[in-house]
Picture: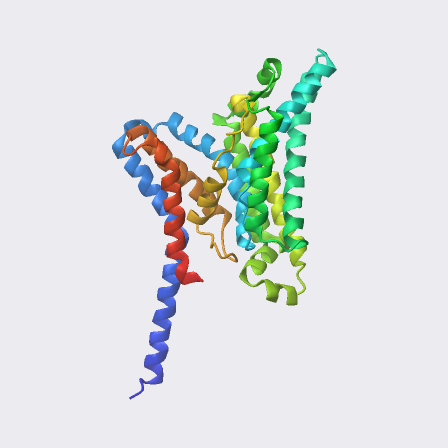
Length: 341
């Protein structure tokens, strides 16, 4: 016996409302998880909730968070980039080598050090954009899978840095370190500069993704690339642009990171790609592409940093297992997303 039409319609309506509720809960899930972790961290160690510790967490989140904003666009479009850590390392090495070379050749004129630092910062952005463009062209024009392209450049970037540093470290000259240091250590209204930059990059990324035709095209390509082509979207151009955007985000993050230590070594940026991808997927972006939010990525990046900070303060498990925790987070989120394929 078939149910009455009104009963079937009512059941269908309840199912739709339940599905909408589940979707909304999935959207705020990372935020709820972050709040729960903050409560847990405060209960385990009173130092966790201090202003100094929270600002330290946000400052350390800034580098990965900025890269993760760019990674959000790449993953939403259906791509991936495994080379961002090695890319940051090479950019840092190229910046330091260039600035040291210019400092040795220009002399001691009053304005020269500032011009040298600005040149190094500009070089970081240019290199990031060029590396991203190379990835985009190899993937779109060369028809090579993003995984293979970025896996290959991962090794290329880090080996070039190792050669440039002769297996050791490239260290910025002391007078340049003193001038460059405020980019990382200075504060504006009590908030460190890297946090402000992270906030601006995240805001800009959210506006681009949600309020521009480019953002809609990125999501359309990730949802169904063939349909996007039928809709006259320039798929190859948009994909290239996402990798260029990611490369520039890596450049910005490196500009903020270099004055922190004033050096670059073959281990600089190690596992940054894992942290950036973890932040994106924990923030709710679908690994299959087509769906994601920059706000979720920001929450995901902060959430992972909070986990690491709690581990450092409480010693629940060894801090050497931070990467293992991030790996588990990626696998867990991928498992939960399996029904969205």
